[in-house]
Image 1: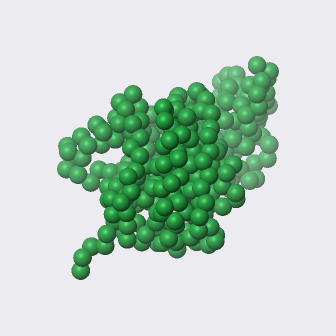
Image 2: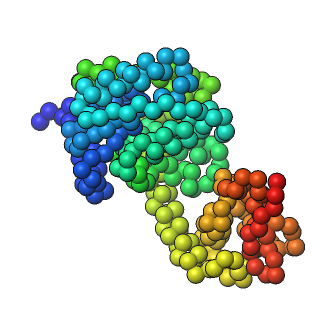
Length: 318
């Protein structure tokens, strides 16, 4: 029997994803950049449920409005019932890639109208994400990569190679936009894509992207289990944390409890270094001062400190 074509394989992947994750909404959105991954996903998704394409124009490149307009025409041609083009202003915090991502997700959240949003991240994107996490040394949570389901975001193509979406566009006669940022060596992810992963595939004899994606899945399962245990512990902890109760916990669990407690108290942008410094207030107490962490409240600094034998959060003006 002949192997199904690329479009049929993508449709099967999306249909299976819908069944596995109980996506029973009567409509959904697809985040569409105009590139081959999102264009192929939009084309397939439109055959499964009424689909609205959400196109975010970041305005970062000359001709971005024309790219968005072309994506709009493609979306209507493949059967999307509606299209929204959203122009955003991209800030500078965290660097250009992070700032663009923040602006994009904010715009998608505002435009989705309460329905799920399908994102076209592929297995190749997952492998790149795992490598970025490894390089930053940011722990299992980062190496665990992207979640297939993180409502309202859904990623039905995380098990699909990028080559399949390109092939699907070819079958459909669609000329997808090729983002020059994807091959620009000034961007870390672009160099991972064009230099590092091909080298690893060559040196290790292939299968590296799939192996990295499997690693992400295994770590995500472990992380979810530990996070659930930490949430259960926090549910009975109250406003302050008792070091005497925290100290006997396994380190991985204890630091997750601390992380959850900090986030619930208004901390943002937590780093592993900060969490470990707060952990030292529990297991290496020598009378040290509070640990500064990022605060969600403008004009205030947030600290975690140990007072009268209890971990407490307190704020000071900037």
